[in-house]
Amino acid sequence: MPKQKSSAASEKKWTNLEIADLFLRIADILEIQGEIVFKVIAYRRAADAIQHLGRDVRDLWRGDAKNLREIPGIGKEIAEKIQELITTGKLKYYAKISKGIPVGIFDLLQIPDVGPKTVKRLWQELKITDVAKLEKAARAGKLRPLKGFGARSEEKILAGIETARRKKSSTRVRLGAAYPFAQEIVAAMRAACGDAIQNIEPAGSLRRRKATIGDLDILVASNAPKKILDAFTQLPMVRDINEKGTTKASILAQNGLQVDLRVLEPSRWGSALQYFTGSKEHNVELRQIALAQGLSLSEWGFKEIKRDKEILTPREEDVYEKLGLQYVPPELREGIGEIAAARTKKLPRLVELKDLKGDLQTHSTWSDGSFSIEQMAEAARARGLKYLGVSDHSQGLGIARGLTPARVREQWKEIDKLNKRWSDFRVLKGVELEIRADGTLDFPDDVLAGFDYVLVSTHSALKQTREKITARVVRALEHPLVDIFAHPTGRLINEREESALDLEEVFRVAKATGTILEIDGAAERLDLDDAHARRAKEIGVPIVIDSDAHSPDGMDGLFYGVAMARRAGLELRDVVNCLEWEELSKRLKRNSK
DNA sequence: GCCGTTTTCGGCCCGACTGTTTTCAGTCG
Image 1 (tube, chains in turn red, blue):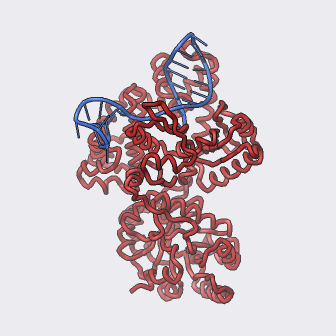
Image 2 (cartoon, rainbow, N blue to C red):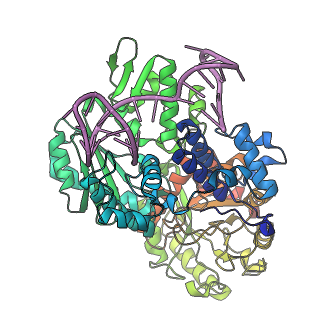
Image 3 (tube, rainbow, N blue to C red):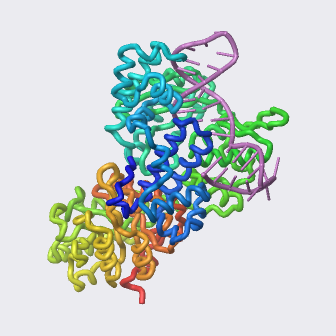
């Protein structure tokens, strides 16, 4: 949580994430104080916008608060507050409104079913200012005298406290884990309900393919809602039932994920799928457009407000069509300008998995992979790829059994031999070359020249300062035999933060030198992420989508990598491995003169 | 606090579920 630093640290450089956190905190305070909800929403919207900016807010600011107002959701007031944070490191407004608010109050808001109104009453009527006090009071039956509270409320709050504690210790689930789990639930529901299910699909942030998922939303079209909900709450993966009504139920799964399921009549499928896919921001914008046309839009469908007449939309496409919009692919529905683009029919034609012709980051038993080059190649062929780049680690990464130049030459012999086998498929000689801590490369130039392509990355000294790691990477990217920079930020989802690398500078250098940047689709990486990849496209940096597979199954990474690319608005022409190898090869820095 | 194919003022999305209620408030998504 954000903390205002003392004057000694007033030069503190606020990151986007920290600024966003501070605005969320402000929104919480305003909400507890009973400020009009729209002001609260404005701060949350601003926080969200800053968090998903994809570049340092300072780069946009450039010394003038007005520049910040280009960001949708940021107006005069908030722009000036951001400027104050950048220039002074502090925010007077926050100091003012947070005065006298016990810090424990914010933890109370994390408890399910405890919202701002409840928090305010607990605080003012019972002097409860933190979770420990609330737990004690609930156990002692001291909440029930409050108007609107009863014994059940106390139980619910105690259960909520437990849930909040569990949630705090766990984190959002990676797309790479949530996606297969959702498929598992869908299969189990189909098995249990058979023909009663007309349609079933995971919606929510999973359908939008966010890198991490908070909970699962599953949508079912059926005329037998009771049967569906009964089956759902009895699935083997259910640990607890949170709620169960006539159209929806919510469960906690054994793996800790919350799963919500909604049932609707098939005639309402389109509006329901649209609604439950979100995002909330996207939906709010759609409803505003509907209102302007005299229509009310909900998960149940459209309603003509004047005549109170329902208009149903069986297909999701119908919803957008009715509003005069181009169909917006789920991955773009984040309320960050896609609706304006859909109005003018200017949405990008997003890259698809089937557009990929090859994979340029994979590993074999030569370094830390678990399968032979032959096995990996056959797996790639089975997935319809035309080429597979084998990019085992270089010697500097000892832990991954990195290759010496001598072993590299042996590996080349094996690849040459394998390549005699196919006329429609090719194994490429690649390498994942260490950029050492001092910016030098792990192989001499004469070795680098022998590869079909060279991919560089950092695995050590990831905690270097921004200046140091940026200079180190830039030096590598300027090397004429370096073609691709892999998993640029080095983040591991839920495990390791991004390095301090100045991506804006890296994008600039990549564009200037013709170096390709990677979207690494490995479940734990997804690096570049969607926001960074979007920015890279804006600058004009070529992108490659790789799986970073260490096994045939690992090639699923291409699917997740494409997901990030689609969220970034990337098209076929932005992604170099949509090219046949002959074409791609000509574009490589080493081959272009 | 933000924003503008009705608006620089006056709007700002809509509905389900729960618990404690005899008609609704709070919370959530």
